[in-house]
Length: 71
Image 1 (spheres, rainbow, N blue to C red):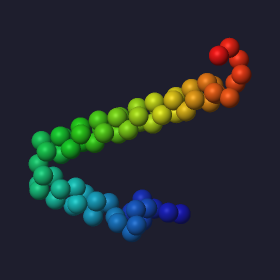
Image 2: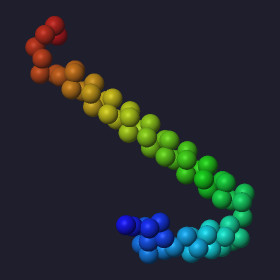
Image 3: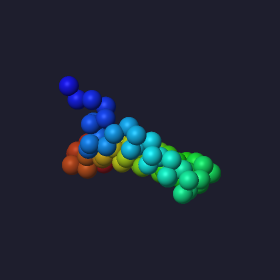
Image 4: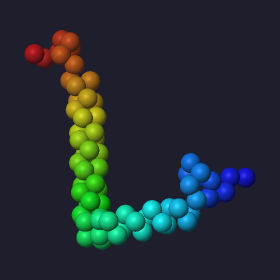
């Protein structure tokens, strides 16, 4: 059985806690909150752009110029 301590490339829980504390001391809570907000908005923009492109692709498939209907 795979334990939680060995789940992430051999890094244990205590190593992750220590790493989190070091990052918190180096950057501070305000900067980490800003980085998190910026990352979240970037992901949101990327997802909306991907959804827009899939909608545009679907519109291109339905509006095929090879149709010889009413032109």
